[in-house]
Image (tube, rainbow, N blue to C red; front, top):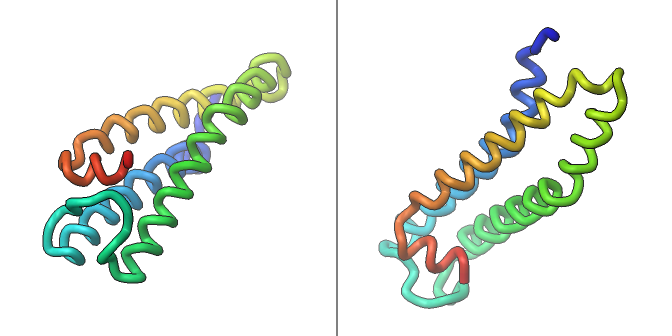
Length: 118
């Protein structure tokens, strides 16, 4: 089985984009507010920060739902259909990188994580 670079890139891109959006939001928030948020919600946020937060949240939400509902079905189909077995490696890589990126997101500063989860 030959693994191609474009397949690796397609597998890695969603998780890396999620991680990039998350940490760019943290940086935007820290510099935009001058401190970490002290309350739940978006009170006192600039419009660009609100938009950045919503885009990041929705992207993470869609990726989570796809990983929970679509990924298992795709993996099962690829395991059952002989012609599609070559994609199992890419789906496994996607799942691994998704979990690694979520783990890296947990390394963000605690005040930001508290705001994010609320």
